[in-house]
Length: 182
Image (cartoon, rainbow, N blue to C red):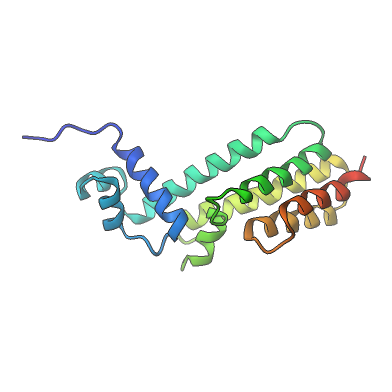
């Protein structure tokens, strides 16, 4: 007798994989562990995701959607306000108890395909590049010099990597950097 299709199977697998990948790293998690944690069989996993690369790409696509939704919700007002809001939203993100780094930067750090030879690496590079472009575009709207975008990018990047100032200090610095720009 054929099994009845589980309509929530894909979502359950992706949610479990996303949690495991984010907390432990993509390379550290095998498909057998995802199958066990999701409570599904191999056939179900492979029906939805032909292999680990497809599952990782789906994880990063979901992570991007979540980050973009949070960022877009924070970006209101003039470019000056948006630049500060971007840093403030990221500062809030990294303060979360469950924060384990930026999913995209984490993936790129552990990926053997750093040049974009696979879909997941291309997705991770695109997210980082597009984040940088967003800052550059807002600085251009503000009429600021490229060096302002560089400084704001360094603040943002340091927040994600937990190598920079305290999040509240980063937000204060962002305010100072954009304060004199009309």
